[in-house]
Amino acid sequence: MSQTGRACVAEAIGTFGLCFIGAGSIILDAKTGGGVGLIGIALAHGVILSIMISALGGVSGGHFNPAVTIGFLVTKKQEAGEGISYIISQLVGGTVAGLLLRAIYAPEVWQKVHLGTPMLGEGVSVGTGILVEIVLTFFLVTAIWGTAVDDRKPDIGGFGIGLTLTADILMGGPLTGASMNPARTFGPALAGGGFDGHLVYWIGPIIGAVIAAVLYNNILIKKD
Image 1 (cartoon, rainbow, N blue to C red):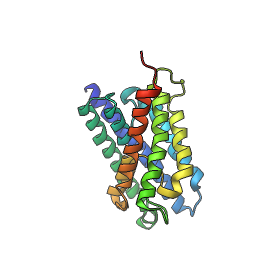
Image 2: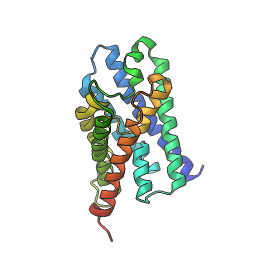
Image 3: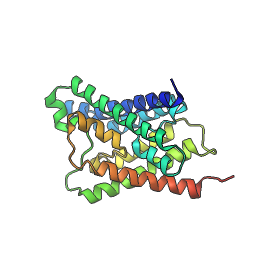
Image 4: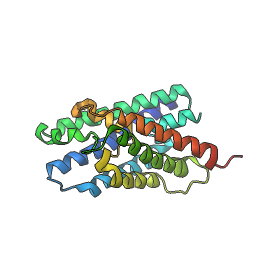
């Protein structure tokens, strides 16, 4: 198998892990009547992302997120063909996770929370949702560049990124579901969660990721 092929498999596995554990924690929270809670949901997302990046980052870079990949494409850190392959792999991984969760949980459980699909909170407009996703994704992608891309990065594996995801969910979870990741929303939505407000979870994360990537690449990173 080619290096790109191996990287795409890694991207599918990593995104599958994030979506399966992340969306699964939301469904379990519904099943247990709030037994997981916001802190538990945030930790589930953050810990699994940390582990997936640490385990598979050496194979693919550990994007597991189309918005992250688009940030790499815009800054010319990745070729277009490889980037598109990454995005397709990420969407496939997220969808498989959604389908598996649908098979595991009874419909009356997962339907309560739209199969763990991020949704806008009560009273949150589309515009506000996009703004929240922009800011949260900006923090996430800044953490990715600072702890994984920059040659001056600390040797902490994926845990700086995972902790950022956890913090973002603690703040934004009740507002937008704090997706920051089109694949994280797309997979469960396609599997049965529904596409209400779906564009929020493409527009916001992509804008936030591009701003962070361009800012870090052009201003914050040390140039030779």
